[in-house]
Amino acid sequence: MNGPSADEGEGRPLVVAVVGSPRARGNTSVLVDEALGELERRGAAVVKIMLRDQRIAPCLGHEDCAVRECCPQADDAERVLATVYAADGLLLATPVYYENVSAQMKAFIDRNVFRYGHDVFLTPTVVGLLAVAAETGPDDTLAALRRYVELSTKDDVPVLSVGGYADAIGNAAANIGLLAAARRLGADMAEELGLADD
Image 1 (tube, rainbow, N blue to C red):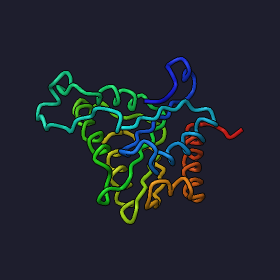
Image 2: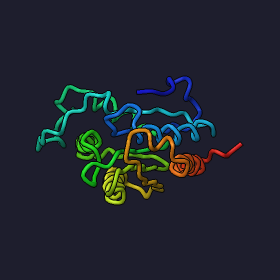
Image 3: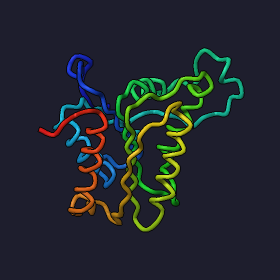
Image 4: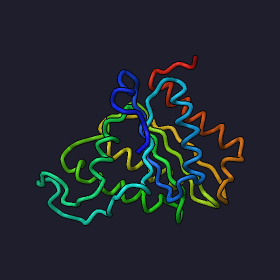
């Protein structure tokens, strides 16, 4: 996880980006950096979680989650979720695989079931969604991310989204329109967080 320490972020809204790309510098990650850069420029504290660097095992389907004190899986999921659930702003980003989220993002989503079973919900002021496709599926993928947000929050939360196309590694970094859309996403999230453009 990359981001500020507790002291560095104090007093500033915290935006946590969860990135489901298996590539450290893939198209999705590049666009997330654009959005986070805009948020940071406007005064937000930002944390970028690359799921590829975390050990998050798939949900094992325990039927008694609601009565357990903790998930029995010994991995990084609880630490990641603690950071995500503390966020003032949440950015969820994934490449499109088979017209849906990546396996890394799906494992992350599924591991929220323990908190859901204990009536613990996300409380961000705003959520941003970003999906990058090679050919098809950004709308379906964004819809899947929206469903996760709807299930994981109790109140209506503004949800902003960007879907785009980049069919080879490095294409997003060369796509002026897509880079601008990612920055606009960051700017719009900043406005929802009450961060003015100086």
